[in-house]
Length: 152
Image 1 (spheres, rainbow, N blue to C red):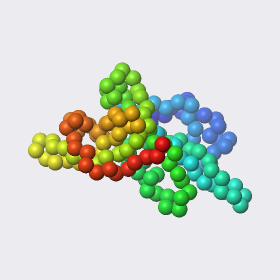
Image 2 (image 1 turned 90 degrees about the vertical axis):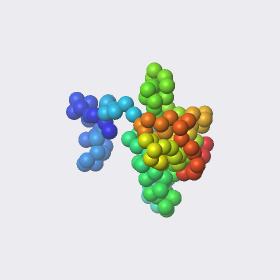
Image 3 (image 1 turned 180 degrees about the vertical axis):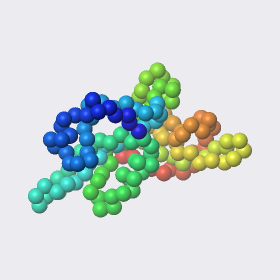
């Protein structure tokens, strides 16, 4: 979720984009939480030829990433990379960090004697982050099922 201000709306929107689409020179993040940046290669028609174009999308949660992974069965969209973007209170530093994802695991753990499932995001450097603020650390979770593995 983003906070936008009319003063930051770019005049480029009216020149190049259709109705309902805007370009902003600045936005504010509504929450200091984990985000996902997805780089896509999308085939689009130019005349009689399909040529690749690149897009970069910042997503609020991993469900949006899953939609890109699962949505295009015709092979018109290819995931180039997925990065996890974490604030300092999640990654253990004093600043935001962005790391490329290697895999997503389905983990399980116990909260107040109830078993729960939690996605675990593993970066190419081996760092792991739980999907939500469960009060459980990655060490408290058991990674048992590989959900997604990303090419590098």
